[in-house]
Amino acid sequence: LVMRHWASDYLNKPWLIGGRGPDCYDCWGMVYCIYRDRYGMQLPSYPTVTSKNMLTVTKAITSGAAESDWIRLTQPVDGCVVALSKNTKILHHVGIYLDIDRGVLLHATDAGAVIAQSMHDLNRFGWRRIEYYKHKDYQP
Image 1 (tube, helix red, strand yellow):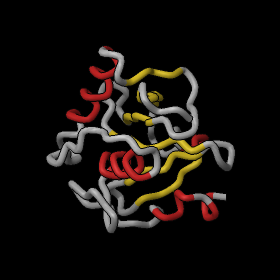
Image 2: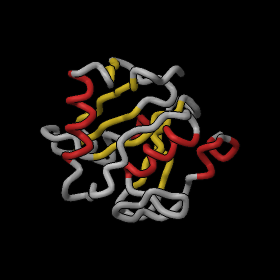
Image 3: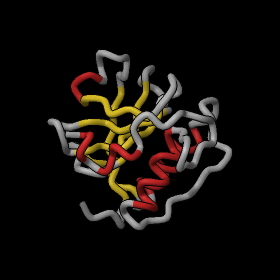
Image 4: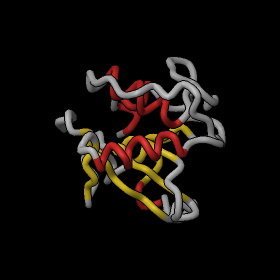
């Protein structure tokens, strides 16, 4: 199903630190572009985000949640931001939840490219902490 979805436009695009599309993305760059191009919303760009300072984005979402810009969800909804961590302490990766194929995460991985991964496979690939956030202006 992903191949017939708009998300296929992003699949296999190379990962690059600071990538903001359309030819390459980092994880925040992909979220940023999808929210801008697909949902008509302008999120902060964070041009200096790298895999080493991903905490910038995490703090923006979690502090934004505290200020009601982002609403933490108990269950994902189509288009929400998924924040993840492998060590459970600091969320350091983001992607977009898509309500297709029983739930997939579209994300730009530093392993090489944008992929669509089954939500059921996330634990198997080492993601221990998974949180869902909806921007206050996003209407699924």
